[in-house]
Structure formats: structure tokens, C-alpha cells
Length: 141
Length: 251
Figure 1 (cartoon, chains in turn cyan, orange):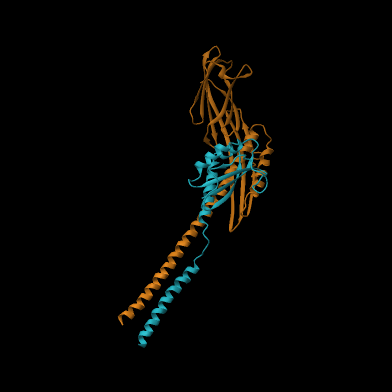
Figure 2 (cartoon, rainbow over the protein chains, first blue to last red):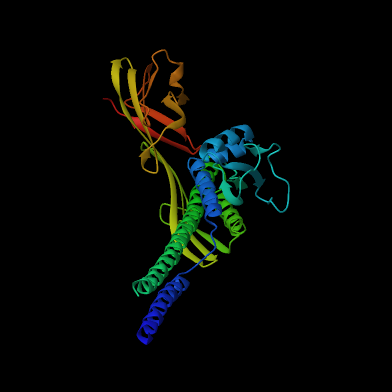
């Protein structure tokens, strides 16, 4: 009886040790909150803008104020299922101060999605006076 | 006795199952974090790539301006505007961009306009950039050079048809940063009796665009002298202007 009790105690001790070790190991692993969806959305947006202006397309469309064409280009450049809203500011404007240059909404139907992220891209246009623009791209997905 | 012994084994197996679940969950969360770090790294890389790309556009825009007669100081002014713009555009910390104009025997204030009379013309702008990003656990120090160069090469010859009548063949080759590039506009002229003439006005004029940055022209006219002086003025697709002259010998 005494030996059986000792075996039970050892079993319980072994089980508790296993769980305790698992918890201890898990606690040592670095943990961060999961913002993966948002970050990916931002990264995709930045990548699209960088690629779009690789040959100066984005700058030319902004300089020509071709907002409709710009919207079409963004629809192609961004992944399907991602909603967007683009606003353009001149060198001295910003989302906080000043109104955007685009007098029409550059969007594929408004921002929808579980997460909405925003990023800014600084744009230089290859024309004689070297215009600079601040482009804010809001993404929903 | 046997049942009680199994109870002990079940307890240990259950503990192992729980431990395995905890570790699997933790491994999954760890993997997600790795993906997040990778995503943030990608975002930062694209941001830096964007800064470099737009720096190239600033240099090109300045070259367009200066090659069309703008002051060379516009280059430095544009770079200073760009530096200020970049510093105010990074919301996650500090972003310093410093540009230094290239200075050498061939460049003056970062600009080289060498529109020679030997059949080769060069318009070029060059600057060194130093980018420093800091904040949110990120420290980036990176230097890069931007050199935007448009070069035009002109060559050719003429066949003497008698009585100063000459059949002239001209070849124009355009390059951007050492690679063949297409021209936006090309104006070819030849010198006849002291004035520049447009061969397009001649019935014999023909142009062949090879589609790879090489353009060939032929025309026939009465041109006194033992050589034919030609001048080519080019705007490339970026808008950079470059010109050159040369004397074509008898072929």
C-alpha cells in the first residue's frame, strides 16, 4: 500500500514536472502581439508604390493630375481584395495640414476590411523644376 | 492493481499531451512573430529603396533642368529641398539624408555638360548620398552614388557623287547610364555654306530607327568642301538634352 502510494506520488510528480517544463520553455520564447495582417498590408502598399514609380509612372500621373488613370494603375498594382484610398499633397502640404491636391477621390470604392493601414511615400518627379509630392495610401484588407 | 497502475500512466500521458499542446502553440506564435519581423524588414527595405529611387529622380530632374539652360546651382538647390523633404517624411524616427555633389576634373558642382565637337556629347549629373535611419530599434547607415548620364555618339561618312554633290550617311547612338536608350526627339542638321540646314527638307532624306537607340540617316545634297559638318541635338525620353557635332569624312 505504501509502495503504491509512493508510485502514485512519483507519477503525479512526473506529470507535474512535464507540464512545468513545457510552461517554463514556452515562457522563455519571445512573444509579440500579432500585427501580421497590418504589416503585410503596409508592405504590399509600399512595394506597389516603389514599383509604380520605378520608371516614373506615378510621378508623371501625379504631375499631369491624371487622377482617373492613377486609380486604374493602382487597381492593377495592388493585390485583389485590398481596398485603397490615395491622397496627394504637394511639397509643403501634409495629411495633418493642408488640403490634398486631388479634387476627386482616388479609391476603389472606399476603405473596407478588418484592418485599415496608412503609409506615406515621398515622390520626386523627373521634370525641370523637380516637383516633390507626399502620397498617402490608405489600405483596407 | 492493474487499473490503478494504468491510472498513473494515463496521468503521465495526459501531461505529455498537454505539454505538447503548449509547445506547439508556442512554436506557432513564434513562427508568426518571425513572419512579422520579416514583413517589417521588407517594409523598411522598400522604404529605403524608395528613397534611393526618388533620389535618382531628383538627380534626373536637375539634369533635365540644367541641360536645358538652367543654372548649375539648381542641382544643389533641388538636393537640399529633397533632404528637407525626406527628413520630415519619416514618421517612425529619425531620417537624415545628406547629398554631396560630385566634384572632379570632369564634374563641376555635380554637373558635366560636355557637348564636344568630336562626335561625342555627354550630359551628366552625379551626387553621393548618405542615408541614416534611426528609431524603433532600427539603425541604418547606407551610402549610395547616383550618376545619371545621357551620351550621344555621332559617326558617318559621305560618298562623293561629283560636282560637290554628296550622299551623306549618319549614325546616331544614344545611351543612358551606359546602356542603349531611345530618344524622345532628335534634330539632325548639316552645315552648308555657313548655315545649318535641315536634311528633312531634301527629297532624298531617309531615316532608319533600329529601335535600340541607334538611328541612321541618309541624304544627298550639294555641299562644298572636303568634309561634311553635322550637328545632332537630342532629348532622351527623360527629357535630358545633349548635343554634339562632328565632321564626316569621305567614305
